[in-house]
Length: 251
Image 1 (cartoon, rainbow, N blue to C red):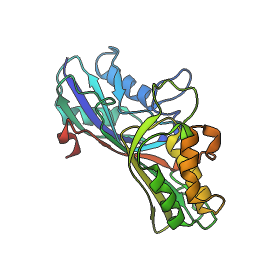
Image 2: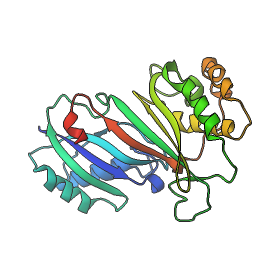
Image 3: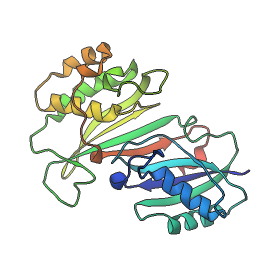
C-alpha cells in the first residue's frame, strides 16, 4: 500500500492530546475516523511524529499512513480539510517510500512556549498570562545549561514507557515579543511534560526565586521533585519537525 506523509496543524484546546485514549477526544481519533470514512469505513490508522498532551497545540505536525489506493496528494488534503473539525488543518501531503516513519525518523523537534504579559481574553487558550516582570537575561543564562546530551529525568513525568531519559538539546532560548515572551527549545527527542517543567523552572529563575547557577544541580539530581511546577498546557506549541532523510518535507 502507498505510504503518505501529511502535514497539519491543530489547536489542542478541546482535545485530550494527540494519542487515542478511551472515552476522550483526541486529534488522532478525529483523523483516523475521517480517513476511514473516506475509504468506505475500512479501518485506517495513522502514526504521528510525537505525542502532545491535553491542551497542547501544534503549528507543524506530520503523520504517516498507509492507504488502500493511490491519491493525488492535494486532493487528499482537500478531502481531509472538509471532513475534520475546524481546529485541525491540513496543508500538504506527499507519497513517500514505505520505510520512512513519522516518529522514528524525525531528527529534530522544536517547541515554543508563549507567555503573555497583558491580560487578553482572545489569547488565553494560546498563551500563559504572567503579571510579574521576568528577568530574561537570567533565564537565558540558565537555559544554556540545558544544551547538549544529558539525562532529563528531573523534567520528565515519572513512570512513562520510555527506555531512556537522555536527550540531546540543540538550542534553548527566550525571546521578547510585543506582548510578552516565548521560549524556544529544539532537541532530538522530548520526554513527557519535559518542556513545561523546564519552562516552569526557568520562570522561577526569571522571578528571582532561584539562581541560574542552580540548573546544573537540578539536572544532575535526575529527580522530578528537584525541578519546579509545570506551566499550563495552553502556552505550548509543537512548532517544527525536521526530517533529514526527507528534505522535501521542509519545502
